[in-house]
Every structure is written in structure tokens, then in C-alpha cells.
Length: 103
Image (cartoon, rainbow, N blue to C red; front, side, top):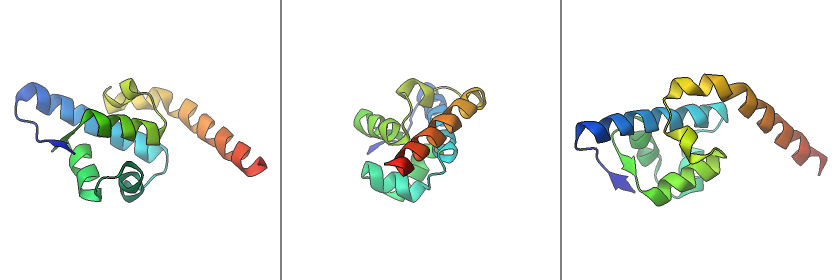
């Protein structure tokens, strides 16, 4: 799945990455257990990533971004940046839901 951060730069990266993933997941209204199943990792792994206790492999990180439907770069920005794009993400999610209901 990934590794435990072992130096200060990696710890800072893991912290912001985890906050970004959690913010994106919550904006989607997705439970950690759902993300875990979608990505093929354990719920504990999701928790460890979101709290900065683990850094996911590149494959896992790309899978997380794909299942959250966000570009990878958005996940590695400080979570506070999500406030600026939350409205756009919500509008996109509502549009997709409306389109799905119309099919």
C-alpha cells in the first residue's frame, strides 16, 4: 500500500496529502470504507493515509484520485485550497447525478 513517512519533508507531504484526500472524499459525500473498497485497500489504510501516518504508493494514489474524480494535483495541495473549488466540485457532482438519473 505505501510507506510510513520517515523524514520531515515526507511527513509534511503526507500530512497535506492526507488532508487533501480526506477533504475531497468528504466533498464527495463518500465514506472511508467506500473509498477503501473502490481502491482495493483496507479502511485502516485509508485512515492511515488521511492522517498522514502512511504515504500511498503511486498506483494507490492514482487510484484514489480516479475514484474521487479529482486531478492528482488537487490532492497534494493544502486542504484549505479545497474551499475555493468546493462549489465547482459540488456543481459537477450534481450535474453527474442529474445526468445519471436521466439515463
